[in-house]
Amino acid sequence: MEDKEFEKIAKGLINSFALVIKTAQIHHINNVAVVNAIQKFLSFLNPILSSEAVTIELVGEFFHLNNSRVRYSMEYIFNFEFLIEEFKKKRLGTIIFEEIVQEEDIKTLVNTIISS
Image 1 (spheres, rainbow, N blue to C red):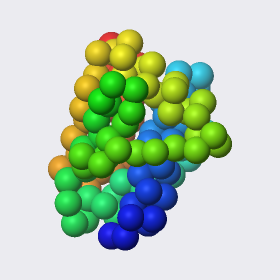
Image 2 (cartoon, one colour):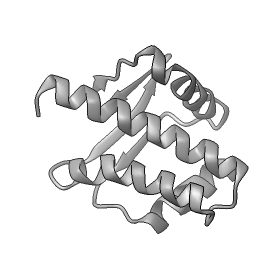
Image 3 (cartoon, one colour):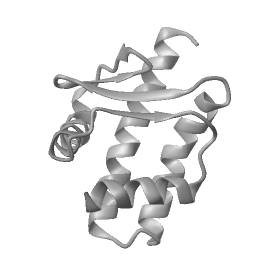
């Protein structure tokens, strides 16, 4: 994967994960808004998982995807900062996905994060 393509996918993956958690904090996990956010997240995640595991790690104030720092622009800053704070509040350091993920898997993960 080229660097530019990786950057775009990495930003989209982190941003969409933040949106899933943010939306699930407002709406029930089965609400159409949450389901749509999960589908968007899976559209970034599963293509990568078809060839390798995906590690999302918070290192200091920055996210790393598979050991590469994810740089973000101003359009993503609020969602990235939200997710950084959620990781810190929940004392999360790393989330590893090793195989193709389904909607129900993400619902379980998000419910666990929100309720912890």
